[in-house]
Image (cartoon, rainbow, N blue to C red):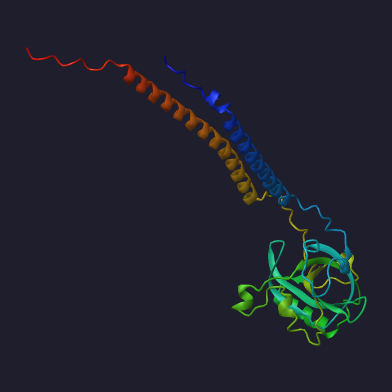
Length: 283
């Protein structure tokens, strides 16, 4: 009698393969949670910057002298009480609404709750020509105090890295606090790591140069973190592989059962076959 060939379902419902299926489902669930976590990370890191950067807050609530500039402070409008000094300089290659000109920069001494004031690099205004920018800087240096003391409002930005012009052509282009502190005379060692772009309309200060520097709010990033999305896809692939592994194991077990049945049938057929007859004696 021919033994019935087991179906895939019959093999899969055996206790051992049900146990393996439960284990694979648990592993798949873990992989699914990891994939979901990566997707959440991608969305979280790509969320729009919803900070209120345009309402001026006291500088001391955002930064302290010598401390690194934080994400919360970067690009924020801040206010401070400070006094200008005679340390005025000009920066080349500064773009303003599609035009390239010069910045007039200086140093403000910011009052501290206790101790000596701290130095803050300040960008006061923009000029279209180098001659006008240098003339303005020289006039301000000759009469330090025309800009302050008083309340200064502006956008607090991170220090810039030196450019090729700074290094190769020795033309100052970057608002680099690290470079400026080495040139400030009588510097007491206290300085903010960022710099301020002044908003004359909100400050107790005149417009310096041809016009105020245009300082826009920080760009709002809405891009997803695609690296996290890629990791999420990987975890989903692992989840599918765990289920495929169970399917492959059950299929292999069924194929082994079929082979065993066929071998048993072949052996049974061989045993039932009649043997060779007795040899006839020669007459």
